Structure formats: structure tokens, C-alpha cells
Image (cartoon, rainbow, N blue to C red; front, side):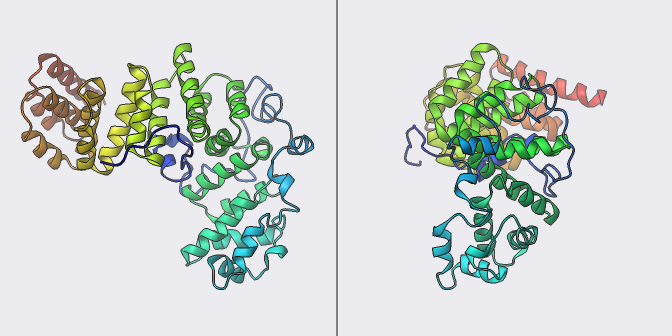
Length: 414
């Protein structure tokens, strides 16, 4: 078992696997259809700060003015640090001067020195995006993308996004770029969103950028999300914001989640699962269960255990089971066992069933069978019904059988 990592968590790698575990509703499609294009149509997002949409409404709560106003206040926005959209980083220039470094090869293919790069020039931006998306050398692509991530600001954000859209950027590029944009200068993000006319693009951009914003400036991100009218968008953005809060301050994120639960807000259990998955992806399964242990017993904790256990089992079923077997007996282990076999059955039903046959009759075997049945009711309902008869506890067997019958009724009705 991995060495335990204790909270607090100082960083969460939201720009890698975490988004794969996030809300699919906010994930851009591979062809960029969820990403904002410069000619998209803005509509449909309503907040308390304006009558309709995100045009401010989009400038958000007090203290979130335009990029120019924020610069006047001495903010740390990218516009304060970048001049005319050019390379902001002396470190990048120094690296680029190293013989045959990926950065130097990127500049060689671009045909420019660092000080010559002007990211307010559409042709320059288009050329860099072309390298990011299509160069055959993965290291050159990475360094070109790093350059864009570190150079985007209020002056060039819309231009870069437009070039990415027309260049065919995929889901991963959008997730990374939008996250970095939110972390670097959320006022620039709001300015671009205010010009967009496509609600689907708008939601995708905002959904990807809000975790970055929350990781860098939790207070204003919370104010913005809370300013939105109750509904599906607010629920979605609350979950994505909590991902970002976990990167900045896990205690703040946890307290905010508990406040939502106490207020009767919707989807808090789903949020808890996503937050636990965030920790597991970035810091490890042990740290995720450390965080889960900090939650009060009940629905939130069970949802978090279920999400992490299922995700782990889908990736590495036997390792997931080994981990579950290290847990103390109790509600957490019970849920973890159920979800581990639910996930294992998704990827290897034969392996899961063979292992169950080696287990002694009793509570743990019942939980394992119940978890397997949860998956089989959709993929193999006859097998699910047969396995229900193997459950020894009458109450658990009845619950599992009700699920099988409900699934069968839905199939007949459909």
C-alpha cells in the first residue's frame, strides 16, 4: 500500500486526470464544439448582477470589474505583467537559448526570437497554435503550449481561443487552456464570455475556467457562483468551483461543502464525490480517504467513498480491492466494497465473479455481490437476477432484487 499522505493538500493537479473525473456536461467535445468560438452566440445565463446572460451579469460581483479596472487596482492579472501580448517570461527566453531544447526547436519552427513574438498578431497566434496542435514532435508541442498558457492575457485571450477553435483543438487542450486562463486573469475570462453568443460554448468555457479561478482567487470565484440564479448551471459550476477550492485550501472547500449540505442545497453528495476524486487523482487514494474521514458520517461520506472506490476499481480492480481490505470494518468499508465490485464488474465481470466465488459467505460477500449486481442489471440482467439468489442477508437480497425488477420494468416500458 502507498505511504499515507496527510492533509492539508498543497496542490491538486486539476489540469490532468481530475477533469476526466469531472462533470461531463462541462467537458468540451474533441472537435471543440463545447469551446467558445469568437463568433458564438451568448445567451441563457442569468445572475443577480444583471438582467440576462453573462454580460455583466458577467462582470460578476462587486470587486470584479473590467480588466482595465483591475489593473488600475494593482491586481496580479496577466495584463499587468505582459506587454503587447509578448512573451512574459525571461525564463522561457533563457530556456529557448539552450541548444536544441524543445523551446529552441519551437522557436526555430516558428521562425522568430522570443522578443519578436507578438500575441496580438493573428498570424503569429495562428502559427503557434498550429505547432501546438499539429507538430510531430510532442516535446515541441508541449513547449509551444506552455508558451501560450504563460502568455495569455486580456489583450490576446479571445484571439488565441479563436485560433484554437479554428485549428481544431481537442478536449484536453481546451481544459488546460481554460483552466490556466481562469487562474491567471478571471476578468479577462469574463470579458470574453460577455462577447460570446452561443450558450453551449459559454458553458463549456466557464465550466473549464472556474476551477482555475477558484484555485487562484477563491473569494471572488465564490461570489460569482453565488450571484447566479439557482438552476442547472449554478449546480454545475458549484461542483467545478469546489475542485478549484480543493487546490487552494482544502479546509475552505470542505467547510463550503458542509455549508451547502446544511442549507439543503442540491447535488452536495455528487460534489463530495467529485472532491474526493480530485484528491485521489492528484494526491493518491490514501489522501482521499484521509479527507473522506474528515466528513461527518452519512450521505456525504458515503458518496465520496463510493466515487473514489468505483473510479479506483475501474482503473486497477485488484489494487482497489487490496486497499479496501486494509480499511477497518464499518460503514466506509461496506460502501467501498460495494463500489469496488461495481467498478470491477464494469471492466472485468469474469474476474469479479471468480473472486466472489472464493469469498466466504457473509456480509462482505453480500456487499460484493450487491455491487456486481448494480452493474449487471444494465449489461446482463439475467446474470444479475441469478446472482441475487446468492446473497445471504434477506434485507440486502430484497434491495438487490428490487433493483433488478425496476431495471426490467424500465426495459419493458422503453
